[in-house]
Image 1 (tube, rainbow, N blue to C red):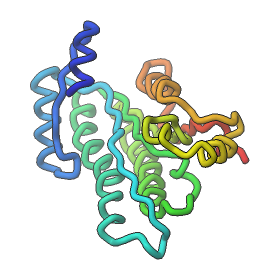
Image 2: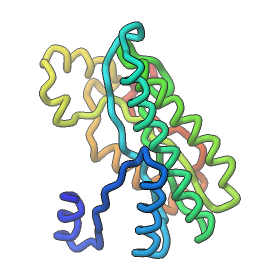
Image 3: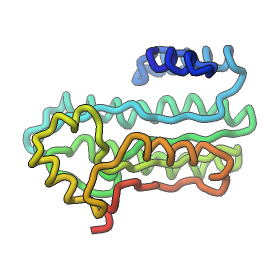
Image 4: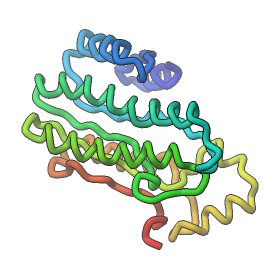
Amino acid sequence: LKRAEELRAGGADAKGMIADLMDREAVQRLTKDIMDEYGRIDVLVNNAGIFKAADFLEVSEADFDAVLRVNLKGSFLVGQAVARHMAQTGGGAIINMASILGSVGFATAPAYTAAKHGVVGLTQTAAWEHAADGIRVNAVGPGFISTPLLEKMDPKVRATLEGRHALKRLGTAEEVAALVAWLASDDASFATGTYYAIDGGYLAQ
């Protein structure tokens, strides 16, 4: 809601809405409200996610379920609801936020890694099934991004993390947003079913 206020202050037509993305009925109400307000949905960015760190043998069933419900099931429910409308209004672009952990593993992140691998598979399947509807579906896999949370990280730990990227730094939110904006645009008209890593070379090692 705060971001919507900021966008309106800059002259954009923006409206903030709140919904439980793990509740099918709530998602359906949300998409109906958007359709009632604007008449169509051209772009969906599935960006909701949580992270709970724990070793494989220590992660609780409750935490594992919570991470998969938000990161994977949420993308499924929202993507399914939006794709139904897009198929009726001429298509659109769906961008699912995965992670570099959508293609590799990472210690202390079994639930998150499983969920992001699932997001990539879900993306590829939806892209094949809905290409004929004019719907492009892609996944974005950011490396470690400099966020307020990581800014509080111990400098030595951060330096080690930066060293795992070929560019020897963390990414920025603006760099990820630029890729998402391209995938949402007509310039990416031939891009679908693909997992786009934006990771500073993390996966190249």
